[in-house]
Length: 438
Image 1 (spheres, rainbow, N blue to C red):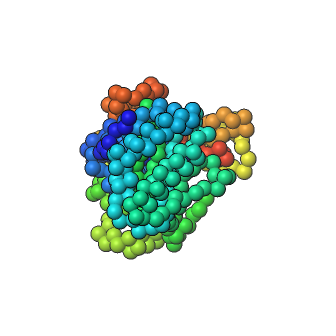
Image 2: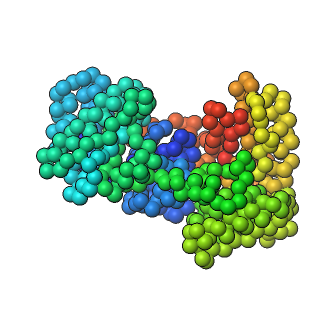
């Protein structure tokens, strides 16, 4: 009925699953690490990545919420029989299979130091949403009994009725210290298999928050979120010792994340206040994180004249968020949105040519452009691909067939994806992330 422990891992994605998966793939590619996607959904992925999913990995990523080690696989139809159809024999068989595979010991080991553990349930699609709480209670009760049989005493964390899904947030896992003192059990139901695992690492939002609102120089409205900055850096294949350039550096968010990845960074901005603020923030970062050998340089200048400030073919990664236009109080008309976009094109296209000059061959440019939601719900954005191709850039498509196991079906649309859009329902202006390679 079930498979035993494997070397595969569960990755729980952030809200933007395509960006999360694209970042993961690029991160591993840049380090020449193996990658095979064995299960794909909008809430979780199952990846074969050898031993590269160890806890430090999540610290380098911006778009992954949790990483779990798979300890058992279960045919998906067995879960549906047991919970969707209420088959008692199927439930009993599931309990027997968990006992036979010694799943409790694989999850908890012999050093339980807490009186609580967690159970979080994730589905690849929505047809099992109605039984998520039943599955959570079943697993929680089973493992509670197993611990009691072994002389331990622990209860599983319950959830209030107003919580949409029976899932612990990464913040709750951190605050309850479940990874070190107990366990969070992950149950992820995919198309053909369900995966039972234990969380080995969670995203730490407090560290990103520290580098955002905790730094000395602030420019809140115009700053890119550190998590998105980190994801963009990974899309650019930024690694230790590479030269990173942000030609619209603002107060230095992208530069900060680059230094933490071990890159040598150069920031350029036309606004003298921004250059000074970025200097303040980078000094703070190097002291706060003990980056005594960090290398950075800040220049005041116009990104449309980069080649006058930066040597040709001297930079390996260009990662940036330029001016995205005015802040909008209301959703604009289509004509207003188009005027905003048309006003930005000369800056973007001029910068694009300069970025091509300073990049080394095979270097990557990752940049954000605005995606404006209009009153009628239409999106207005900048077509950068054509202009980039004229200059000689290759438009990077983050997903290829070789990444996926032959056992899973993947929509052909995914393979032609080049834009990674990041926009919430409430946002008037979102971000389109472009990846180009020289």
